[in-house]
Image (cartoon, rainbow over all chains, first blue to last red; front, side, top):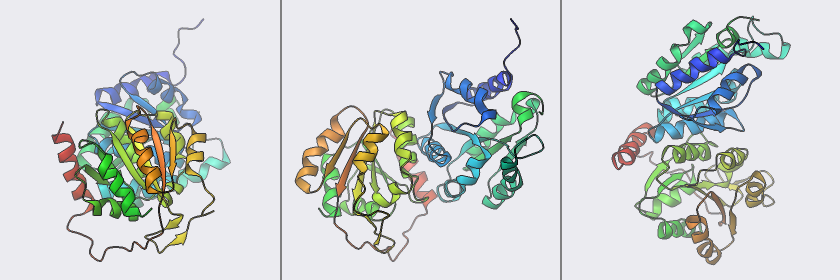
Length: 175
Length: 191
């Protein structure tokens, strides 16, 4: 029996600890296969209320409502969820000015192995720039401190702040 | 039932410390015209996201009852949110949907499959523990305590007459984010 941590468990632990330390109390999620360890860890965290959503823009709305009520919140999803939620993200950023964090796994790059994912890698960052949303790309686990910074940034900038997580940041190495 | 009568019923039955979230368009204007004292957040825009925003507010404020007044056009844009809300099941959230089968503010165009959609059936199938449907004021008056007083999530569909509800001529003195700041000051300051 091996004592090694399950794949992705270390990064999931670091991310959830950062969220809890940053006083995030509400998390919404829609799964991606690369997010399985992180979402499982969030679901097991007693300091965070975890809500599973039917669509990513449900998560955007829930996070906005939590922010409206004075709580810090995070949406965990794939970058396809950012594309789907473009109107909701822009509306809460620029019309309501409500801040929260989106942790989006960054599919469709050199790390991927599926044709159908690749278009997402091509368009995600241009769309985020077009929406005028702050975002950061996390390439490796040692850069995960940005998660806590993003919570603070979202509060200061009064907008959703997106953290794009590469596979290597979640699992410790590129596939 | 006229939309103004449905809004007046909520003004009559809500508690002073209830918090109202309004979806966009005619429902929002009907609630505003009643002049009720409850703290209110007008969630327009983005269209289709008011139920999720109300859920987030309910989770953030478990000590306050959150009542969402929603139009059928706004709800139809994202019926899947009924599944999300039922899964979270906050005991302090109530949803009232004003049903007239039209995009009233946009000019009265019919909703998809207008007249044949049952929101209580959809909500019940999504797992909502209580739903009710009122076709007139008497039914609405009778169902209001069941919606508001039972401990837990509930959805009430109120059938209202088609009534023109055009955009106001003046956009008003404050932006959405200014209204948001005022709302938060009242909500969080009252804690």
